[in-house]
Length: 91
Image 1 (cartoon, one colour):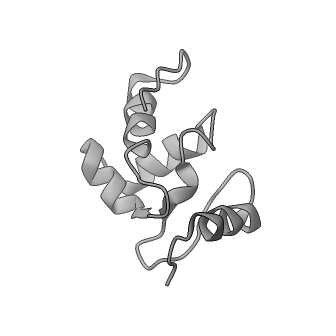
Image 2 (cartoon, rainbow, N blue to C red):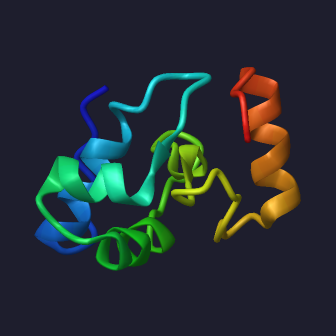
Image 3 (spheres, rainbow, N blue to C red):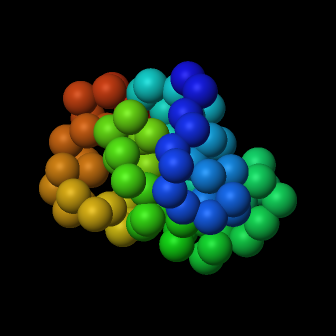
């Protein structure tokens, strides 16, 4: 999915584009996402939080390194529901 929002910094857009590579029903850790864009987990977490189209650009698929559900603008209950709906396996 090519996503070209007209908002956000070049870095945020790079993170958002990487999010589109996380397949339905799977999750990545913040560390893996950071590795994909050549950054650090805290920075990708910040870009995740600024995601303007969170269902289309699936930031809910990013979880903590230990499998924990962390930060989601729609709330953790919604993140949990979305991941369950997709059939994602959580630790």
